[in-house]
Length: 296
Image (cartoon, rainbow, N blue to C red; front, top):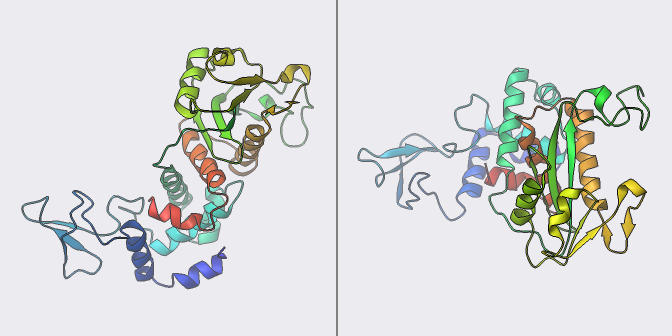
């Protein structure tokens, strides 16, 4: 795994960054981003090509067209630094910290870059989860006095009014043990909403779907192999039935939201879910940086 210093040594110039982007975007040779045509031609301007198939006068393009780097005044070396930092930060990195590290631009620029990178972290491939799968819902955000256990400084103790849902956003997730996680923002935790999510995320060939006692999961009985642990009665494990993995993922997400970002709006929460899911799903990959650049 590269260090940040090694990354900068590997990409000493903007041209070295462009070369890497072209390699990852078009591993089998440059293609027209509009029509996919292989027969494109170099033009006088460096790092630009022309396709004569999809435009009468010729369509000119650069490696930045259609990527998160397009239409920005930020150089690729800076983009690469920020991508690296976001891939390596287990609990996320705030836009303010990014601004301090890159040492240029405004907070708004850093915030914009981080959100674009989170969008690029969304996997284009979707595979239903199989094997032993855990499904659970949680609530993210809200003011400090509504959070479980209170806020910074130990304001509220556990079970002293810190479990309210005011201002929080509902999220549902499914995780395959030793596999991937899928999660999304939902409006309600109704039977219909949870049913639709499970149908979308979980394979019919699943060996077990483990949930807590939430009534919204009763529809699973008779449709899929379903096991329940009753958290309200202090039951957390019964044989293979538990939700420890999805609970651990939620814990990491919430530590990031509370400790790093402090406040996440409902509008942008799906992007943060992209980020945390991406890091989790590629935790065994030695080059997450390359995956983000290729998917940009």
